[in-house]
Length: 232
Image (cartoon, rainbow, N blue to C red; front, top):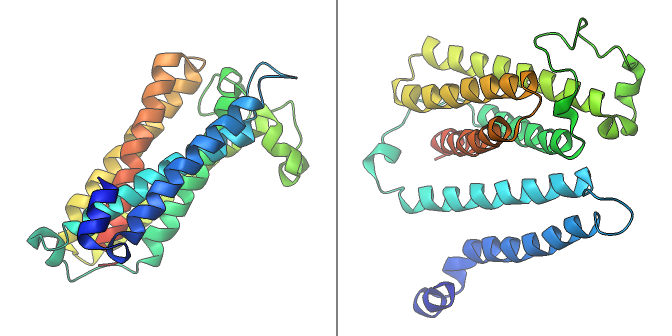
């Protein structure tokens, strides 16, 4: 279909779609690169390569959705919004979401969800008692299961707080056109946090973990939509 529309519409008009196409091809290479890390000296894949593979998948999803929204830009529901927040805020929020997804891949790759299966504390303490705070500032922290889980937990708190600030700003300034999008975004943040807590408490059981990963798709999609509304 892309080739057909390239002849019909011209390459220049579809350049952004070719970017998505090449990312999909690159994703296949990264998938092989990830799997190859678990074929020789280890029985599982590198959590760094797993994270790259996952982030590219979400980047592809985001670009597809962004292009869809651009095509729908003639729709009245997308054109009527006049009172918006500074687009830097939803962009930074989206960056935090992507960072959290990357760290989430570390959690999955290291089986970090199978330790410290309690919430809000990690066993009896806020910081894991098998580690030291100074280790957080070392690159090795991203290969330490307890520290990776700690980072993932606290990034969720930061994202939740950031959302509440955006939510407060929108409702305080009565940005009525953004109410629906920010409420949907809040719904998926709440769902993602709840599923994350259940994932930890139940020792990363496959069904709950899968729901946690699945809900992240809706969270990213609603974040992209919210960001788009404030930039167009």
